[in-house]
Image 1 (cartoon, one colour):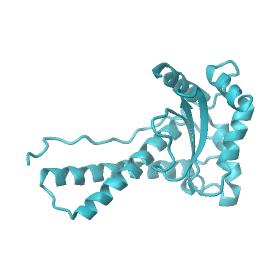
Image 2 (image 1 turned 90 degrees about the vertical axis):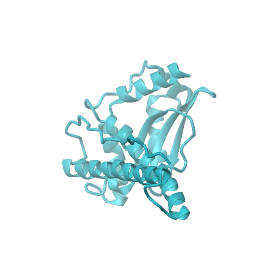
Image 3 (image 1 turned 135 degrees about the vertical axis):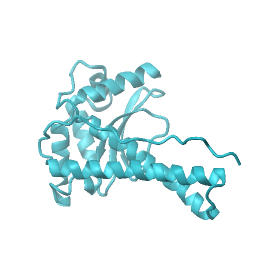
Image 4 (image 1 turned 120 degrees about the vertical axis):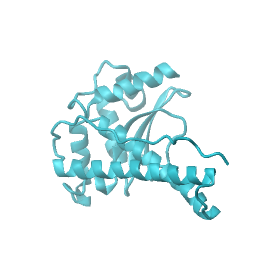
Length: 207
């Protein structure tokens, strides 16, 4: 087989994060380090799979199949964390009561405040994972979903508007598991809703 002349790799993103309310610098540093680990291991898997395709590396087919399964975990872990941290850039801004996103939230949940209340309710679900808010252009509605693992529970093909990391690594420096509600409150205290509204505008225009 012909060896590939080069292989695409992912680079870790940097985020312009202000001082966050209720989330310490130590917590953020630890969380960013974990995000960087997803990027590192995603590239490692891609390298090993490329080497098996080129014939440079011989692996048992069982090992190759496990690497392929692991690819989605590492990729989605990278992707979700990037969207998580982007939501803190440029400091907190409120959800505009006159925005198209607020109108969609009102239609589905009764209003912007009710929308946030519902996200917090879903975030209180027992267990680790994520809350993800999606726009469904086919039904013309929002969906708020609890996602277990990164690669399990996503709504296929739908644009992701908001992500809230509820794995314990996201808050355990600052909060005990029993204090998860306080972490969720801190998340929303730092939320730049302009980021979410821009994602919504892009999702609607792309439909």
